[in-house]
Image (cartoon, rainbow, N blue to C red; front, side):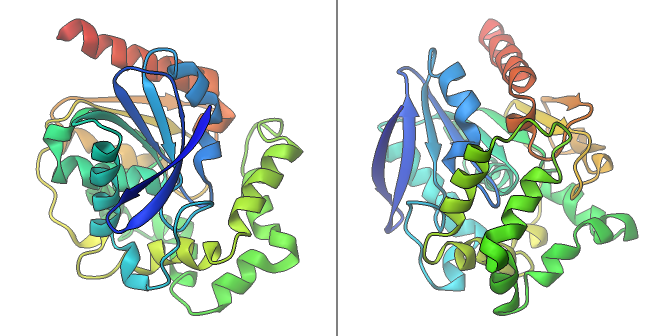
Length: 286
């Protein structure tokens, strides 16, 4: 793996890359960084130029202080510029959690820039918005309301040497061996970098804005799309995946039982196989 930096949309982003060939771009979620794709980088770096970004506000990427710097439209522009800065016009885009939200938004804004879309444990935004109108999902998403508050969430996430960050990985994983101590320390070290916690929270603090993820109109997406879903997600109910085919013309879903929200880290072999099967299917259909 090689580390690099690129300039896009007025900021500098850090990334890790491996391999050559068509571009396969990976977008991580909260509270992670490029490292969450460690099991995928090597596996797909044999056939693709794999690039795993640190999203703006995370790890070694720039961390603008303004809340307005973390709107979905800005995050989509980051991805547009990344693809072009790497010398490509199209890519296969893979996103998990917030990276999945950005990937959905990017696909609608720039469908011609995508070969395929792969989303892990993040529902279609229209299905998520509908889910938040149910008591069941509101209870699961309680933290989104907490994150709207000033100062307090920053304190809670960093208290006790980032005990809350450690807990979401250790306590939510179904497979307790999925995260080693070294993995946890790497994730905490990234979150502990100056400005990172506030930046992460600003993603959530824009979610209800006029141009936020939950206030958009979503039509029919024609990009071939794979969704992979760990069924034991503590924050996002499996029912949020139902009805996604109403928004995507070519939609495939693969559920993984006994697996948490951290699906690509907890069940990497199965996730990689499902991704490879999907990519191979599309290659044979060309």
